Amino acid sequence: MTEPKSTKRLAIKIILPILILIIGFVGFNMMGKLKKAPQRQRPPQQGILVDVVALAAKTHQVTVHATGTVQAEQEISLVPEVSGKVSWISPQLVSGGFFKQGETLLKIETSDFQLAIEKARAEIAQVQVALATEHEQAKVALAEWDRIDIPNKGNPGPLVTREIQMQQQQANLAAAEANLELAKLNLQRTELKAPFNGRIRQEQVDLGQYLRSGTSIGSFAGTDRAEIHIPLPARELIWLNIPSATQKKGSSASIYLPGDKSSKWTGKVMRSLGEIDPNSRMATLVVMVEDPYQRGDSKTKTELQNGLFVDIELYGEKFADIISIPRKAFHADNLVWIADSENQLNLRPVELLRREKQQILIKGGVQAGEKLVLTTLSGATEGTLLRPVLQENL
Image (cartoon, rainbow, N blue to C red):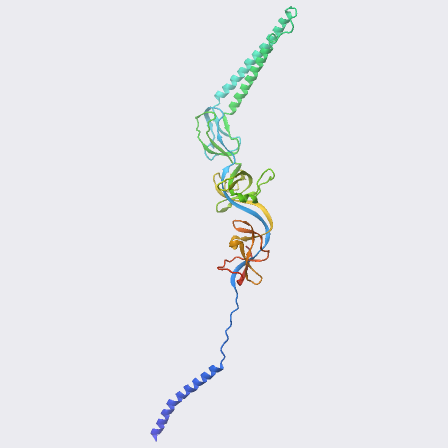
């Protein structure tokens, strides 16, 4: 009896797990058949992310960018008008020294010129005595003429009345007086004075040196005004006001050191040299800057020294209701990219007015309020869906 029971138990232990596995497998398959497969959902197409800005029509002043070199408006050679030995030199008579108009640069020894004045005065006195003598001799000659009793003697001639001799002495007196004035003038010329406000560019003179009249001892450059000669393409002249017979006022200008806009001077166009270089097709404008060395304004930090290379912005014609865009938003074949009302890319041809350093001025083809695409897209095509992000400013 014991053996059949143990066999029965063994069969249950083997068959029961197998039966459970079969039931579980069948149930899993039935549940899988009852479950529905999930449906695929396509994400909504959002377009390419781009930065855009709303176009605006504004008043725009044309700016012409140029470069040039500063030079003095006036520059002369310092030349003494009389010869002599240098007796005094101003401490400022060195390269870079500043002088105001009328200040003395140097003095030449005056003894010879003072003697010339005394000599001229003595000559005047001699001529005055000779002239007085002629007057008295004329009186005597007339008295003698009256005492002579000659029939039909007529009127006395100029030799008898000493008129010719007196005219000669009067001429001598005028010459002597002129010599005195020349001697005084030469004495004044022993002081070499600054003819205008300026600075010494170079000098070659020492104390005790003998100077000859007409020989240069250095150069003197004015400091009241500076000139900048600016080469420009001839096509740029149409945008600027250049003084002429019909145009009185020239365009204003701002002058900067290269890469440093904190140092700024103001100027204006004074004239054109009136010629176009046949090789480069460049014209030359002259911009004038007042008080470049800031002699009248000690608060300004930097001097606009001669020889400086500077950047210039020339302000020309103003246009009302003009649309300007950044240069990076202007593409080949005069195209701009516009995001239309459906956020699709529109490759828009435009009419160009002018290219500037940072901006493009548009004459036609776009309207104020349209969205200009600023982002560069590779392989951009008409109708490309965009996801625009509006920027506040250009």
